[in-house]
Each structure stands twice: as structure tokens, then as C-alpha cells.
Image 1: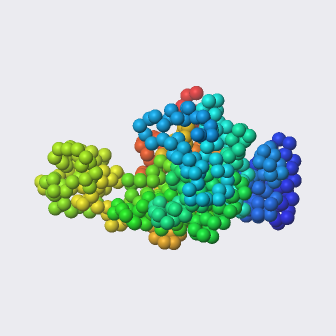
Image 2: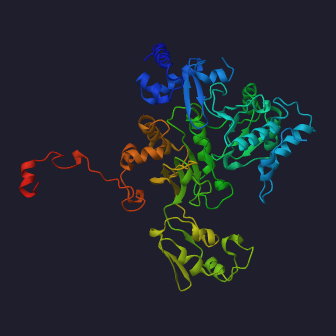
Image 3: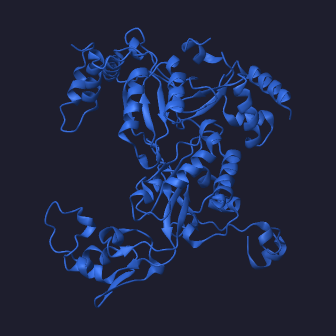
Length: 79
Length: 438
């Protein structure tokens, strides 16, 4: 899958789910991309680098979200 | 005069043990006086507010920290843990109070200069409070604000050649024992392997894509000084294949009292004359040792590397010469429950740079399996329990080995597959019923 196509798919799918959740596990992303985790990681890394996705971490677990979505962005004054 | 009244914290100082409350008060006072003239980049009274919020948590019986966040340094998904106080008006000094994990040096060897530089940086750009070391082994910097994160990261990497550690669903900062640098029991160079794998797996360390945390720990010998067998998903424990080397003259010197047992570690009181039978031979878990006249004999085939005899008589007994590592998988030590010890998956493998076999035949196949099959927040040890040891050894492409069995029936790995059974699973039920009633 080409990067642009993957980007569009991720944004589209995550936006669709925004009503119920704003943070996603890596597994959710690799399922959306329908790729093996190692291949999906290359794309997800690039999406983070380009600012399409951002990391969220509790300290023990990491998740991904789109910048500016979810409660966290409000409470951190970063939106 | 303290900024906040802290009667409950003060009470904690009354015990006989060193108190973190005293440490925090000392740091608060030091920041208030600021004798060194530091231009504090976060509130000067951060530590006083930290004491205040902790007192309030004790009063309410619940935390006033909000958990987690999106903060980090550019390109890294770990190493920074967002912490926010939910009473920022009352405690503005800790409104943002993020934790940084710093990758500790191999074997935790420091120079005083390096430690001083780290502390100076942290006094300047953070709260000055550190935790040496966190459970994973990292240097922990407790408490700074968001704008300071990139500044700290820049200084760490550019001035001190120092990286952040792992947090979140990453490979966590690999930890090792002091190894061959100072220990004669070390069966391989723990620091070399730890350093190599840390560099090799930078992507896994900084960009989270695992189902949950993953820890490597490297112990040079089965004494397990970094407790890899209990606390790491992949535990590397030094071992040897040949015989324990025995210096019979030194054995006699221990018996005769010329050499203190345990290298003199128990010399604080008089334990009586050293009794090799009682203190070594009878304590051997496999009973593989005996005195034959004046000669100590060891049936090495039965030795399980408990290390007791070597620890007691280090000048008489020494690790063998054919050295390598045993690899165990699936340990974890969560705070609440579910602690699990590692399961032996590779009885022996040689440890030679560039460690290709360890990387390509052990670590990477395990990661591929866990990344594909692991549920969210499922540790490797839990996946091993869920899918079975048999699945893991299939993934690794190794043959089952009796040494992988902890004890009979605890982790049986033999389940026949259809293609291994003549005729498969299909059977003629009428033929079966001829011999077996319903």
C-alpha cells in the first residue's frame, strides 16, 4: 500500500471512530491497514513524523491519536 | 516555614528508616536558598508543592495526579511520561510534572563528573528530584514542564551523549549486571551484549508498536543480580557447558579455615568452624556433590547452576570454560498480581559479537509472533500461557527439550497434530464401537 493511500485510510477510519474513542492501540492501526505489524510500523512511524498521528502514553501503555482530538488535548492546553 | 502544612508526611519521618519525605524537604530547602544561583526553569517551589499535593492525597485517600499524556520529544514515543496535577491552582509548581526516563549506563557505572552533570541539568531544567534507579533500571528524572522537554533532550544528547530510555509499549531500557567488568562469575560480556542490542533495537526502544512493554535483562551468571529470570520478558543468563573447575588445595584451605567462606561476607559474627558437609554439600539442590576422602567430587551432569557452592567457595570452585547464555522467556513482575518466572527456551547459545544468532533466531521471531498474536496489554508470558509453550518453540523452530519443562505436568508441550498421527483425526466410528460401548 502506498503511503498516501495508507494515510487517507487511517485518517478516514479514525475520524469515523472519533465519536466513541480518540486513542487507538497500534494493533487497531495495523488492522485498519491490513498489514503485518512490522510493515504497518513503517507507515505509522511516518505518519507520526508528519504530524498526522501523535503518541499518547500512560507510562506503561502507548496509544496513537490524531492531534487535537480527545480530552487530553484540552486538558493539556495544547489545542 | 514550609509552604504547606504536612502533618501526615511528617509522621512518616519518625520511623527508623531513611525517609523520602526528609529528602524532599531537604531539596525544597536547597531550592529556596539557591546558594548556587541556579536560574530555575521550572517553579522554584515545585518540591514544596509536591509535598503539598502528596499530603492532600493522603488526606483524601486518593491521588491528585492525572495519568499519562501526549507529551514527548520529537520522534520518540517513549522516555517521557506526562504527569499533571488535578489541583493546579492549589499547587502551581507541580501543575505539569512530567517524568523522564534516562537510559542508564551499562552496569550502572558512572563517573562522578557525569553524575554531577546530570544533576546540574536537572536542577536547572527540572525539579532536582531523581530516582536512582527505577524498576527497569533507568535513571528517573521526576518533574518538569512541557517546554523543558526538548531542551533537556537536546542537552542530554548533544552535551552528554546520553539517550532517553524506554516507556510505554516499547522495548524498555535494557538492563545488565556489572558483568566481566568486576565479576569473575560472569560467563559472557553482559555490557557488550546489552549495549549492542540497545543500539540494534533503537526503533523498538523509541517507537512503540508492541502490544505492551517488553524487557531484556542480562545476567552474567545464574546469581541473577539484575533478577532477569523474574523481571524480564527475555532473560539472558550466563552459564557453562563443561565442568565446574575445582582447586582441591583451596577446598582444603576452606575446610581448614585458612580462607573465609563467602569471601568473608558473613564475618560480622562468629558462625563457628566452616563445615563443608553442612554448608555446601548438603545444601546442593540436586545432591550432586560429595567428599571422597580429601577430594571434592561434583557430578556435573546433575548440576543445575544454583551457584551456591561457587558463592561459598569462590577460590576453590570456578565456572566452566565453555561459556554462553541460557535464554528464558515470559517473566513479569507486575505490582498487583500475576508475577511469573521465565521459562527456559534456549538452554545454551554462544555469545559472540555481532550476536546474529541471538537476534535472528530468538529475539526477532519472538517479537514477530507476539506482535501478531498478542492482545493489547498482553505480556509475552501471558501469550505463552494462552497459546502454549509448544507454539513458542514452533515459532523459534527448536526441538522440545526436557530442560524446558519446569516440573512434570506444569507446562507439557506435547500435543499431537493431525499430520503427525497416522490416519489423522478421522476414524471409523463403527470400527471404534466394535470395541467400545456407548
